[in-house]
Every structure is written in C-alpha cells, then in structure tokens.
Length: 274
Image (tube, rainbow, N blue to C red; front, side, top):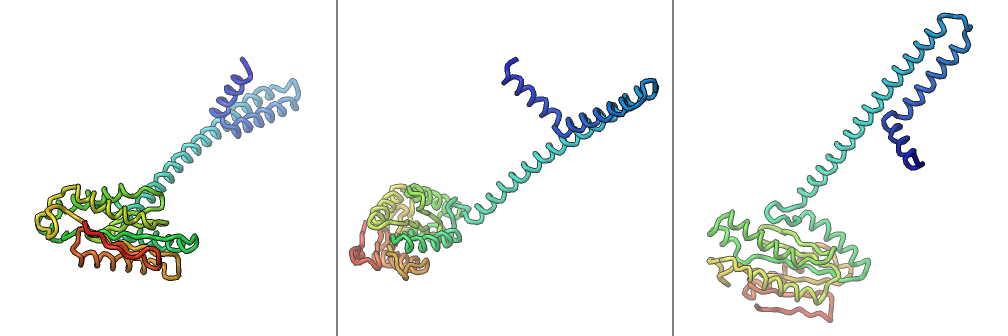
C-alpha cells in the first residue's frame, strides 16, 4: 500500500471514529494498563480490573463517538436551516422591491438606486439620464379589455423594455400604474436612440388597442431627461425633468418622445414625432 492510500485510509478511520474519541480510548486504555502493572503479579483481581477498565474505556469512547457524530448531524442540519433562512430572506427582500405583474423592480427600488446613482454621477462627473415611458390611453385599454388583458399588455411592454437594458448599471422599473422608468448612468446622445427604438419596438408588438386616439395598437410616449453632474442633480430633479419632457410629448400628440438635456449647452432639447 503506497503512502497516498495509507493517508486516505487513515483519514477514513479518523472520520468514522472522531479524534476526541480516539484520545479518550487511548487514555482509558493506558490508565487501565498502568493500574494493572502497578498491582502485584499474583493478585487475582488485576486481570479482572484490566478487563473492566478496558470495557469502561470502550463504552465511554463509544458514547463519546456517538455524541460527536450526533453533534455533526445537528450542525449540518443547522447549517442547512441557516442557508434556507438566508435564501428565504433574500426572496422576501426581492419580493419587496419587485412588481408582481411585470417582474421588474418597483418604485421603492428605483428611488433607492437613483439616490445612489445621483451621488455617483456627481462624484465621477458623468451625466445621468432617465426615460419615463407611459402607455398611451392605457386607462381606456383597461376599461375596454379588462384587468387580465391589461396585465398581459404590461408584461409584454416590460419584457421589451427589459431587453433595452444592456449594461450592469442600467435599471428598468415599473414606475406606477401605466408608466415605466429606465435609469441610464453615463448616457448622453445614446438615450435618444434608445427612446426611438423603444417606441418602435413596442409599436411592433402589435397589441390591439381599439380605444386609442393615436393608433390601433398599443403605443407609448416617452419623456427623456439628461442631467449633468452639479448640485441640481438630485432624484427629485431628475424625475421632474423626465415628467416635464413626458408632458410635453403628450401635448405634442403622444406616440413619440421628447428628449431634454438640461444643464448641457451642447445638448439642446429636441422633439421627435414618430
């Protein structure tokens, strides 16, 4: 038997018979032998005491072994429970920041992330953009088609918006009833292309909307705001600028987007009709 096999076998023995039990058995055996050797050779009780000592040592070491094995089982079960509780807690936390219908993050998560991103944008001196996406005449759609169809529509739109998120720092959320928001750090001109693509893609979903005043399919109106790093870059200001751009796009006829780059002289406000 080579050294590796011997080490493997020795490790298996130690695993089956824990080290403290081995030490207890060895100590008990040595004590019994020492008592036996200390007694006169012609003492008839010496062998009996040796046998009793060895038996008691074996019993104690066996009990200790079983106790340690049981402790290992309990420790394993406890670790499993801890892992399960950790997973459950993570799931509960996720449910608390996730929209039930669309599976996107909700407004609570958006507010938390936006506050952090505003601070990071100022610290790194980079722009921060937000797209506020609203389904056109969605209340009419809900009243005409019902809640179930409305949920299916919201899910389809949210899935399409989720596809537009390609970078780790980007975020798509359900902002409120019929509005979604996309948070886009370090984005300037690209946000206009993204808004145009979102409008086109959602229209291409071809979800019938017979009660819309702008199209026979579901469409969206988008307000885009890009703020440069300054003391004005706050979550409230970013949302306000996005809502203003959305309102202007709705006044212009819906089914389009308006992009507004505030506090950036090289990025004037522009309007796109689709």
